[in-house]
Amino acid sequence: MANFIKPYNDDPFVGHLATPITSSAVTRAILKNLPAYRFGLTPLLRGLEIGLAHGYFLIGPFAQLGPLRNSDVGLLSGFLSTIGLILILTLGLTIYGAAAFQQTTVQDTDSVQELQTKKSWDQFKGGFFVGACGSAGFAFICLSSIPAFTIN
Image 1 (cartoon, rainbow, N blue to C red):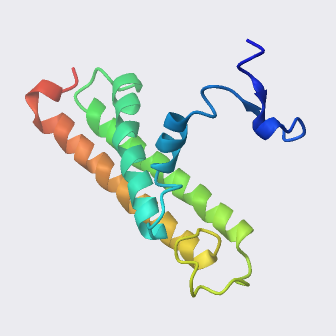
Image 2: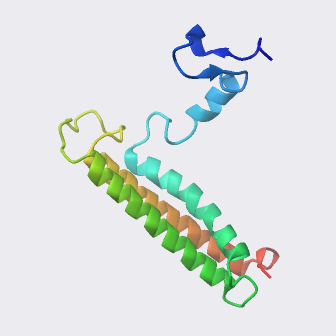
């Protein structure tokens, strides 16, 4: 085990251990393809893609594990709970953006792809909200209209 785990870049003061999982090319390739790290995306598209993924999977736990899961309105209550959580998450993104980017000192000329300005963060937040609500609505339509996916 000691042969596989060593300090990252052979520097023991970094505070990170290089394991076969954390330093593999497969792990780096997966992480590079996540929307947070992918090059060439605008902040709006980053937020939209992250929101699409989160809104789509959030409805399931609310509909299947919520207190109204065995009633006729279980899916609707799960959908409304999902929208409520998306609103709370968007509010959290708003508070973070207001606290972190109070002054706009960086020029927005070439930093459109970075989330380090207030304008970019607002675009990211808007994309997240629209993507999450849209994909939660799509999941609700799929779950309510396709008989194989109906929740009983």
